[in-house]
Length: 404
Image (cartoon, rainbow, N blue to C red):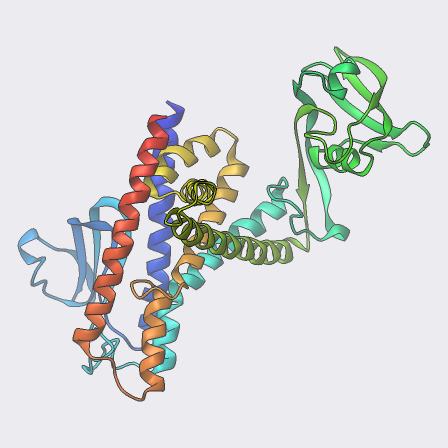
């Protein structure tokens, strides 16, 4: 049941984020004098359509869909829950009709093309600001926060979930479900109270190879034990799986945290995209080199590239159900992360995407010559075929992950 619910929530969130992206294009087009012929939620075939007639919205009959009477934009609700679309008048750069995208100035085209990207960044900013206000765990390493305006408002006790064989934790007599309360160096007086997993990991890392005192609670009884930690270059320092969560709340700085974290996630996303392409192309090159060791290295890089991408099926069928099980905070953070990812992907200089279309228009402007409609369609269509082929491969990988 949780998997089904996760899939439904995933579909709704993806439709919302993609439709919001297209709504950003819609608003910018309307504000910059470009007519929008149709704004659709989900993809055709159509289910319902409306249009203004004599100043009032009227539902169109099916016979009127292709030649709908009235004025302005057609609003449609469609059957395929995979996003949305914004169909503008004369989307080719060569179009010169009044109210067309092609006739708009370069600056207005730039605003329209990046309106969707801004919408996705804005959604992430709003979600993260609200989360910072009501309370948000640390989801990523060195997560941005304003230390002077951050308080712990909720706590899941830091508890041992796993003990590794022949580890310092096992030798010290620690057990699963023991609650870690505090840490202290054997020769020191300063006590570190464990409020979250990060606190424990940072202490272990700072004192690797030393003897420390761990105070833990087991069935309401407090016990302190001595533990000799492994060196920093060992496989693990303590050898215990840890669970626990602190929720951090901001007040006046919530918008600052929302903005800072949006920038941080954007940087991490671009870093991940860059690493993906490096692994992909490096792996492909290495697989054709006649050396077994190099080929194995190339195969590992290609596997790493494959494991790091996920399409709509993987996001909806695997990631959303898993995230939903971790609670509402994880879900909303994941939605913000997907929104940032959509923004970052769409600024890439790929002709079928917003960033690629803007690049083509920019090159045409620098050449002081409009891009021919046939040339633009050829570039975009070929780029779209490549993206579609990649999408098919990613979908196959997603299905394989699901059945695993």
